[in-house]
Image (cartoon, rainbow, N blue to C red; front, top):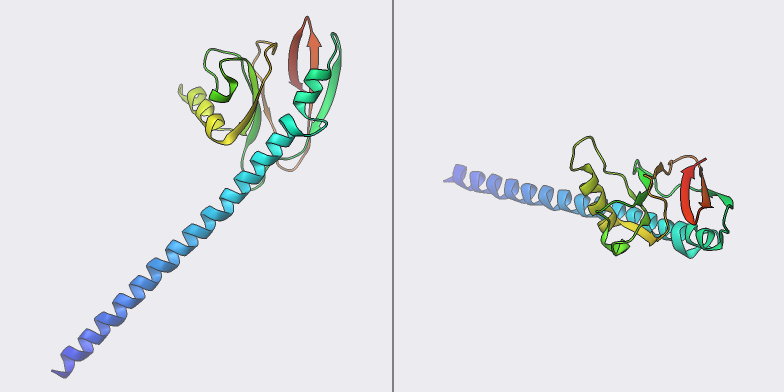
Length: 169
C-alpha cells in the first residue's frame, strides 16, 4: 500500500511539471510573437513615413516634380532582425488592393522567390503587411529596390514625358 501512495505522488508531481513546462512554452511563444509584432508595426509606421507622411516623403516629392526634373531621396532602414523590406512598383494587371487597380508604389516585406507564384505571394504580402501609394503616371517598369538593413538606400525619382520613374542611385 505504501508503494502505491508513492507512485501516485510521483504521477501527481510529474503531471504538475508537464503542465508547468507547457505553460512556460506558451508564455515564451506569446512574448516572442508580441515582440516581433511590435517590430512589424514599427516597420509599417516607418514605411508610411517614407511613402506618405513626412515632408520628404516619396508622395510629396512626386507631387512637386516638374517635367524633366529629378530628385534624389535617401531612405533609411525600415526594420531590423533580417526582414527584407523593398520598394516595389505595381504596373501590371495584378496589384495590391490598396492600389485600387491603378499603378502604385509599395513598401513591404520581400517574399518573391523563384517559384511562379512568387508575384502573387508578393501582392498578398503587400496587402497584409505593406504600405502603398497610387502613382497614376508611374512608368511601366519593374521597381524592386531593397531597403538595406544597415545602410541608407538612395533612390532617384524623375519625371520625363509626364511619367514618373523610380530608380536606385
